[in-house]
Length: 337
Image (cartoon, rainbow, N blue to C red; front, side, top):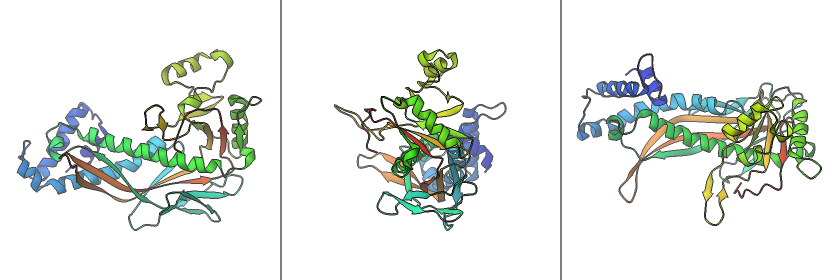
């Protein structure tokens, strides 16, 4: 079948004079034609070609998922795909900046914690493990148009986006315990959030001109370019997304958080008191996708059926001297990490 048509359908793209719905319909028709089926196949016919059809869809997913994750996380992370038998190694290039990289932080293979390793070459090796995103959908749901290919893919993409943010924030949190004391600015009565950010940016830019600010909503909402919001652009940013987009020429990026448990008190995935100032050129976060994705049927005890898309992935952090952190001990967000 025509792969480009399937890729556009998964991404929900409209093509020339055809809407995204038209593209989805055409891609499904092409998929059915591949197996000699009509546009209204029976359940038996779908069952006969079930694995082969999903294999074609998974092959397309494997092609676009790393590229789309690069578009999402590319401002602060390098995303690379590796074959299943390849060694997961990143060439660091100019990541040393004006000083050598001091540490690489990566996930421990079994312990689930991060370990620090002295970096002494131009390569960084990364461990990978299997991550899974599931969706309650059947092949019949997709073929009959009850769930579009785009809806199916967007669920997978959103799941991996959340996983990558979680793993990245865990790595950055570990970095805050390893960074030089001079690169950690603690907000206090004598050092407000703007002054702390100014100092962190000044230090980070000494190693390279391009840096970005990353933080959670509750902390970024406190950052302002001019006292009392006299800047019209800032007021528009806050009205649109809750915080400014640019702080004194430095881009501001919001990190998402997720609720793990609620009740009398909400437990978030992450504490929100840290703001990270990271290099934009030598991207400190390394994301590796490894091997082919696997789609597995998972039948629930109650009779529902979920399709789990699993992919091997690793997330690591290269800690260079231009990583700076602003810490706010008064942020009351309760988080697990």
